[in-house]
Length: 375
Image (cartoon, rainbow, N blue to C red; front, side, top):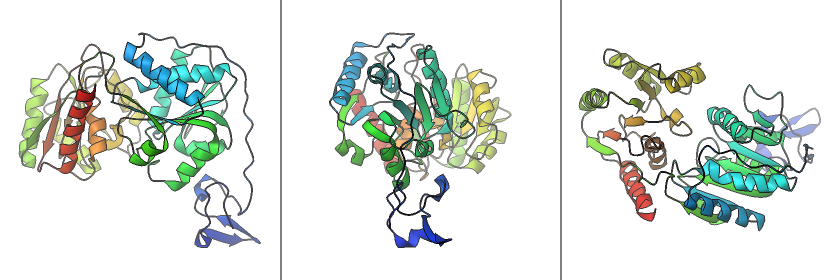
């Protein structure tokens, strides 16, 4: 007995109903009876000769990396693009996307987080204005076929045996990392090559793929190394107020470990700075993010929800209680990677506040310095 969607063969994860067994391991994607073959979904295919409309040309290093990635993919190899935050990973995929589309092949861009999917859809549509870019995520499932498909990892279950090129961003992030069902569904959707993207790669994927690295941002400046302060919680709060005042011409992203910290910090900082907060259970996340982009308020307080995917020009980053277990080395690298991404503010500032100097903080600083050295 086997589930052909998630490869489940564990008898305890099948349920008997009306004369047949069905798989409970992947039931969240719809019911599938045991031993039922997965049918291929037919999508439109056409040869498309296109090129990206970039605001800025790729740097020589980006061009070299882009060509290397495309060459390896065309050789039939899966590729892991290991690049620092802000290196232009998305831009580096464009050559490969155009190459596959020119041959009439199907391309998908899959990402863990819905908010990033929505932003990337708009980004790709502006870069490829002549193409039909489709977003498939929660609340956006009416149309599932286009010239380029951008979807969450969960939505890949709709596309068995469909994609000649599957680009997977944030493969080290929740909910994809360590999720056997999502990993199997992703593999099922891809009949060609996979291109993984991350600044904080999982060692398993690195060993399974050809690795291409890029540790230099387009503006050529090194990755900002945050200042670390080890002190009690109330001193951390005082330092937040101090640096809010010191950097008052900049917007601030303030990361906190828990939802309750979000709410508490919002009210504590109200007398000092205009602010708002978001977390995973917050209803109007999209609206708050748009207001922050529009500079309607100065400080945005967040849990690790916004550790990836958000790009705000000229933003500085503070982390409160950075020694909390929710802040892993990977998440801290991503968080401080929000700084210095723009040409107008290539250096930026990061403040890391903690009660103890955790291994995650130490390794974060070490890896950021190593990336700067390797660049």
